[in-house]
Figure 1 (cartoon, one colour):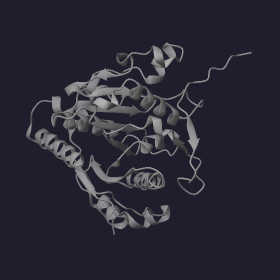
Figure 2 (spheres, one colour):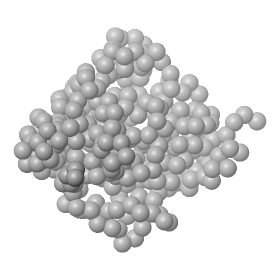
Figure 3 (cartoon, helix red, strand yellow):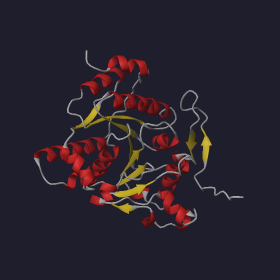
Figure 4 (tube, helix red, strand yellow):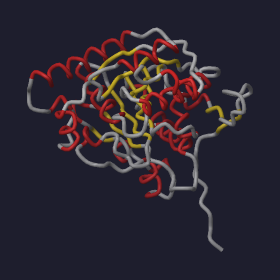
Amino acid sequence: MTETTTLPFPTLKTSRRPDGEGSLQVQLDPSVSIGTAKVFAVYGKGGIGKSTTSSNLSVAFSKLGKRVLQIGCDPKHDSTFTLTKKLMPTVIDVLESVDFHPEELRVEDFVYPGYSGVMCVEAGGPPAGTGCGGYVVGQTVKLLKEHHLLEETDVVIFDVLGDVVCGGFAAPLQHADRALIVTANDFDSIFAMNRIVQAIGAKAKNYKVRLGGVIANRSAATDQIDKFNERIGLKTMAVFPDLDVIRRSRLKKATLFEMEDSPELAAVQAEYLRLAAALWLGTEPLECTPMKDRDIFDLLGFD
């Protein structure tokens, strides 16, 4: 008979008030709360550029003198590779290496230095079909807290896997102050954004997280984004066009702040610095009313 290993994930308890109708989400133990750092969770359709956005935003915060921690929350663990220049082991990888005895881990076993001093962690995920990514996020935060890293951090950025609605998707919302949505000026990205708005609204019933705004990515125009934002009450915080230098930065395993100088690159860098400064000063929480799926079909597109 095969022996089953039980992972030592943090204690969870059922929420007295559900996050949303029919919700089966669980409430994290308050002992694993992050603390005083400003926490941002970056969401968006799969492949929309969340990791590129998160990494460059992390560097922008660092350039403003902030101590930054970026946490990748995707099993493919590529959130931080432009910061570290390679794929780093995940929290699950290093826990497995010590037979799931977290007390044996050192900080350098799961936190890696990145460009401009950004601290990098890849939470990873359980093997396919074997568990929920939400528990992995919880264990990652618990390890960071036990090693007192969160006491020395000004900004935490969660780079969250695509527009699914499982616990791995939702867990960072239980820690974040503001959720940011990366989107492009197309139907699929905006449809995913609407679902994310629904998820954030559900979590806001029990947690402090609120919508911060929209980051338009790979978008020369924003007419469809603007139309959707106006309907539900969202605001666009920054716009990044579809530039070849952004594509090349990923191929070179580099952030945009390391690429060769050009006028268009300088404009993008300035936009990231402006966005970081605005987020640090604080943004008003947005109260949004997501649309019905069919209504999005009717809203978007050309007349």
